[in-house]
Length: 160
Image (cartoon, rainbow, N blue to C red; front, side, top):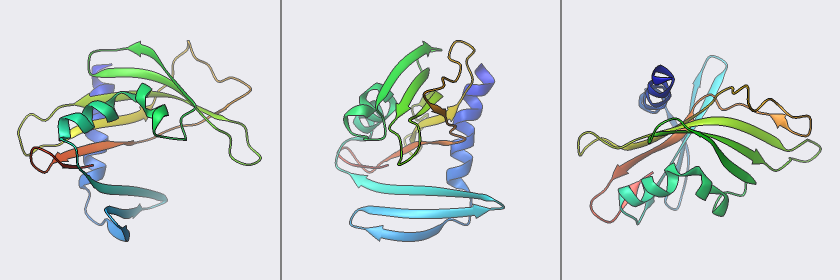
């Protein structure tokens, strides 16, 4: 379990720091990049927000709050608190046209920075739990690597 938590954070950190990201769009405060490697297409979205980094981290690391601001989350339930920094959630998402609703079992790992120049990190990946097998009314979906890196821009703003 310790390895899975570490690899979750490491995978997101590695993906975000890869060279070769191409900026594809800039709208207002939002920048969108893509990175292609073989058959894998990754996206990175960055925005400036006017809240302190520790507040953004607190809001983004508790996935139960996400239903309030993300229309792709119908339900979100903590299945297991692995540690103070790791939780396993069951998330349901609305159906897309002609498809069943989706569900995910995800490990969310969070880390505060060790040094001032490091970001807060919230890493997400799918896991399997025998206690939560796929159900016929949902399409079990998978997240390979996702999350947030939150860089402080001073005392009252940050880059997510």
